[in-house]
Image (cartoon, rainbow, N blue to C red; front, top):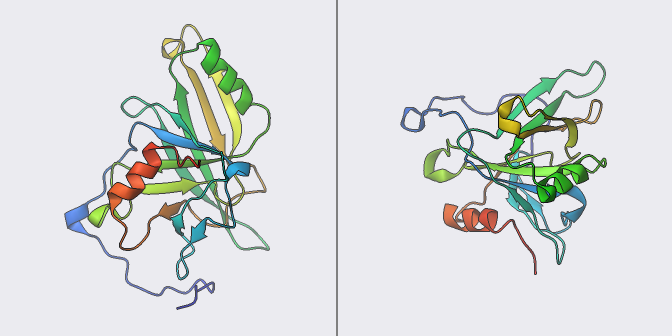
Length: 199
C-alpha cells in the first residue's frame, strides 16, 4: 500500500488500555553524527513514513552513548505550522553531561562546532510487544546544539545542553519509530546498546 500524503485519516485512533501511556525515556541515549549514517543502507518503512526499519552507519563509524540517570535526559517534538508549505515538526533533545571533566568538556565543545546529529532514544513506554520502544530524532535534517549551560551554583555543576531542529529546517515528520516487523526487541536493543557500531 503506498504512503498516503493527502492528510486524510486512514484508520481509527484508539486507546490501548493494556499499554497505557507512561512518561519518560530510558537513561541512556545514542548520539550519531548525521554524516556517519549510511543513507543508502538505512531503510524506512515502505508503507509508513514514520518507520525506520534499519539504522546503518558507514564502515568504521559508531554512535556515542550519553549516559543518563533517572529522567535527566528527555525528548520532545512539536508541530511547526507553515503558511504555504506542508507543516513540519521541531524535534528537541535535552541532555545532561554529569561530570564536567576535560574529556567530557572536549565532547561538549565538539557539539558546539555546528555539526548535525541524530538522536536515538528508548522510551519507557514501549507499546505492545515493545514495538514502539525506540524513536529516532532528527533523521532528515539533523539536530543542532541550541543551548549549553554550566554553573557551579546550579544543577550540581553539571553541563546542561539541548539539541533541536534549526528554525526553517524542521523535520518532515514527528520522530520516527525504529521498528522492523518480525524482529525481536532484543535485536534492536543489542544494536542500540552497541551504539550501532559498524566494523
